[in-house]
Amino acid sequence: MMESKFDKGPQRFGSGAVKWDILEDKDILPLWIADMDFYSPAPVRQRMVELAEHGTYGYNMTPSGYLDAVVNWEKNRHGIAIEKEWLMYSCGVVAGISWILLSLTQPGDAVLIQTPVYNPFHDVVKNNGRVLVDSSLVNRQGSYTIDFADFEEKVKTQKVKAFILCNPHNPVGRCWSREELAKLYHICRENGVLIISDEIHQDLIRGGFSHTPMAAVAEDAAQYVITLSAPSKTFNVPGLHHSYLFTANEDYRKEIQEKIIAPLHIGGTQMGYEACMVAYNQCGDWLDELNAYLDQNAAFVRDFLAAELPQVVVTPIEATYLMWLDFAALGLRGEELTKTVASAKLKLGEGYVYADYADSFQRVNIGCPRAMLEEAMHRLVKVMK
Image 1 (cartoon, rainbow, N blue to C red):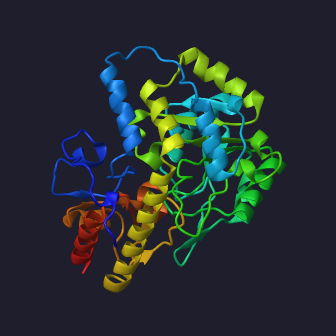
Image 2: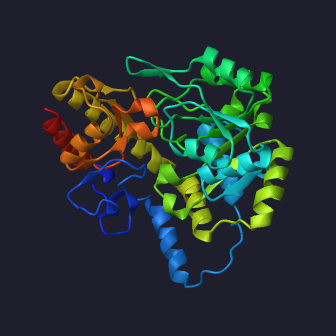
């Protein structure tokens, strides 16, 4: 592999990074939480320095050009035409989902998710007093599909009011096809189910695949889908707490504004707005290089484990920088699996946090320099053998 700008990352241990410093041991390689060990793009870093050196950090307005940057990014990268008035700020995607549930559903309403799925989905439903309904994905020899019959049955019998979609899916790495999304959409429309689509990984698509926004699968979809996204995963700026949501439905926007944003006086930070705007306007080439590097990292993990530890089932990765590995054939599950991984001086993502039944899985963050990933895989193979 030719030398890449992504081969060298910052020293993060001791910087206050959750990914590293929560471990209190600099010898542990952390490939768990979903942020990358790469420098953010140079134009973003430069703009942050300029803002910091200005020396005043008062109340800020939404920068001129910010809305255009998001509209153009969604159109040029994902082929969806949205209007500026559809956009609303959120301090994070999970926070935005919470705002939507509080604004557009009632306590006791049923909300459906598809496990194994990003664990805050579980929490945001239960912690807001809604009833969690699960239509589990189907795992066929390491490849995940949707059980549409189960999905529709749960929607009808459980009187589901809202569906939280992970598109692309974390942790199983599916990049849902237009056909799959359209089937989900029509089931929800026929049964009056609000669709909340988390598309934070929309830019992180593996080679040969393409992202389809849920709000683009039907002519009227933008009226019945609320989409959430952010530059945070894409450009490694999650600590700036900047995301956005959009929908063509004026009534939805009005409810969220009146019930959440206005009473709490919620607004974004200047650095968050500016980082998003600079990234979307100037860093498309950086993203293309990143995705190519992540493709190579994914291929390395797949091929290395196939050769050295073939008992581990590597789920095909179509999107994200998160790989989903099944250790069931090694007879390892739950705490025993976690302890075995820890004995290799590794920290991966425990599968059981995404679904109780996924306790033989570990989620691996490949968003790191190749040398770090190679060392992690060698450690993993050594302890498993």
